[in-house]
Length: 179
Image (cartoon, rainbow, N blue to C red; front, side, top):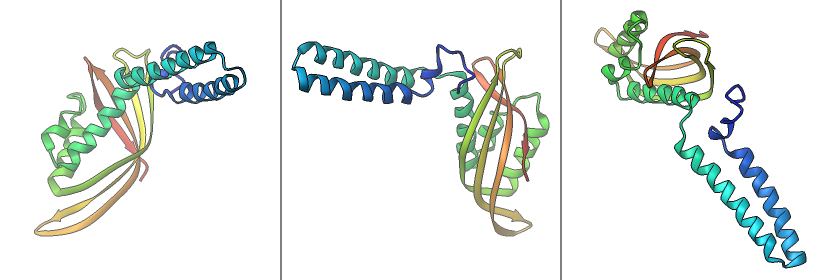
């Protein structure tokens, strides 16, 4: 999060503003109880407005890092639906080997659930087009088809997924897994 531009760090996580705002409100509440002055209430209202603005900005501004994470989550949801076309739409045309592996997996498996956790996204803003790496843990369950038999499977791995910005979208260009 902190490698993003210093001006936009709060658009990805307003928690520091909310925590600081909450502490300031506690102090202002103590001042108001001691003094009873209306100026303290005005200051508290301003702090609440800043906190509200931080939440609204977080809600409506989608940063590049959040777009990359959303791409991963959307691709996982498509895999969970066993929608091969939707999954391959997230893969760059410059990565035919990745598309082929996706086709192979979805063709021989009926995926029941896909869970993504511990995601960290790193952007390379200097690259043209901009690139990113999403590192995360994935846990998937389902059934594998082998000839005419179905076998239950569980898949757990740490993935490093490489993505490239293509217009307003992020597309997968490659990946590495830990196992």
